[in-house]
Image (tube, rainbow, N blue to C red; front, side):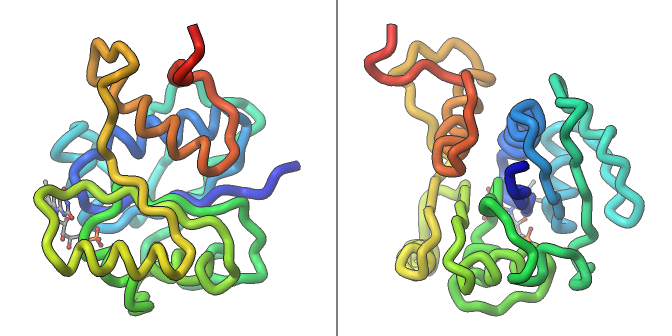
Length: 200
Ligand SMILES: Cc1cc2nc3c(=O)[nH]c(=O)nc-3n(C[C@H](O)[C@H](O)[C@H](O)COP(=O)(O)O)c2cc1C
């Protein structure tokens, strides 16, 4: 049994990446511990017309396609510091914040954890576990760049939501899959989302 993967969804544009990531992790049979910030909820509603009640969230509302029956998607409220992911004793295979807002990036960079997502990220760093941040912002301020450098020095992987166009992308889904594939590669999760360079 592989260890669970933590997914934090925050309020940067690109909620579609989060939903595709959850679909892919669940289809790969991985247990996922999920938390969503209030701004993440707002962006899910704005971009995907997904209404998420953070206090009473039914994960089936995400309408994940291809969800594995072996998989469990556990949801935790963003202020629930009693959640397993808040402690280093809860073993994980890593954490992804996708999408990652500039303000969550800043909190992770400075260790100022004021919600469960930021606390879980802090735990990943202190335990020297995999932490992947997927920021979506353009252009970048000096604070963004400085914060990316800080989290990188602390051991996180900054994986911007910037899809390549060299794999014959035809649709938005192809571009989304490009980014989700890179995240899965970082986590060591098998997928068939995109062809690899050099593959026919
Ligand atoms: C529709 C919408 C789109 C946003 N897009 C971005 C974005 O692309 N990148 C970003 O860093 N912040 C973006 N924001 C601002 C963040 O949501 C805001 O900074 C918020 O405080 C982030 O809080 P969180 O990190 O706890 O989710 C957006 C907000 C809204 C409402």
